[in-house]
Figure (cartoon, rainbow, N blue to C red):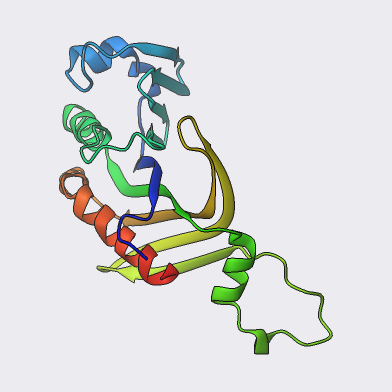
Length: 213
């Protein structure tokens, strides 16, 4: 399987804290503090005391509640090597450095194009000898795997999927939802992990291709 035979659908960052302040999240706060580009167009914004969300037309959204801050980038087939969400999270933490941050989660949805992914997953991961002959035929398989990657718990959820793209049309394959979790991380430690996001993503992609090749 070629190294490039996958499509990054989305990237997602979760930062946990003892107490976030959702009421400060709005487009003006983000732009005035140079957390996001001043020219970004807002698609939707909600600002309340327990929960706030700002969505931009470029596919990036940010939500904050009392315990977690979440930044998501919908990528699909418009993936770029440089993603702004990691700098956004780092700048947000830097400006609000008084907050007691506790953990970081990095997530990706990655599609590996494969024909008939249901039967492929069964044939690739399930040994025929492990299924009694009297059992009904296995038609599909969803998997969750946990690994220790560089000392951190990394989880992979694999499932068959059919994704519709604007230019490519429908593409079937194995959808991999990857997560790496950094527990008990201070603000400085979180920012350092965010700076090396590209290397982390490359490690995740290599692990996916080991699983699927």
